[in-house]
Amino acid sequence: MSGMKNNAGKPVLLKIVAAIQQNKDYLGEVDGLIGDGDHGMNMNKGFTMFGDAIAATEISLTHGFDELGTILFSKIGGSMGPIYGTIFMSMAETGGETEVITTEVLAAMLEAGLASLHDIVGAQVGDKTLVDTLSPAVDALKKACTGGLELAAALPEMKAAAERGRDSTKDLVAKFGRSSRLGERSRGVLDAGAVSCCIILCALADGILEQLGG
Image 1 (cartoon, rainbow, N blue to C red):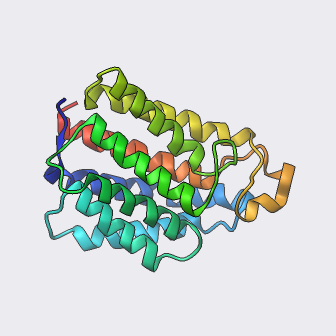
Image 2: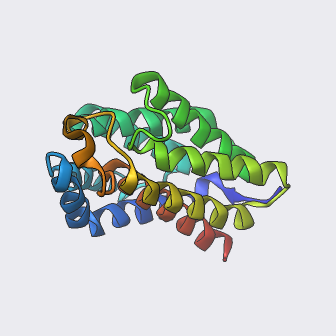
């Protein structure tokens, strides 16, 4: 299968950084409805630190994810820093030194990130967390692998699944985090983590598609 060269990953990484920066206020607004309201600020801080760190250097997609994960895990407060840090570091470890990011490689990377999230949080689909975005995205990529789809064809499927997962959280009751204290009152609002995860996955997909010339 064809794919994107791992060492061509820097523009993709910077696109993810820009997407978080551009949505900082929106993430804060979403989080403020049933949470602390600091999700956008914390995400922006971590991703901006990462963007500054790689600005003057060449870096592969997998090495970039490792660096991003380390920054988020060690320097960002709240729960989302360690959560996203763990996800990105697991993705990086699984991707390793692979030369080409194919559908199979990306599926394995995201599945590893999801598995690491399950290990530290225990949230499942339906619990109104970023799992509701990440899990269907993983499923879409795995289905694409089974169907023999090359990366350029698989990424739109991943994006659509992530968006559906994000939107599904609006009708769910929160089971984790501060918003879980609200019970039924948490229904009717998107989960901030599911929203930020969708932003990241869509930017990842769009960035790779640009590198593929799509």
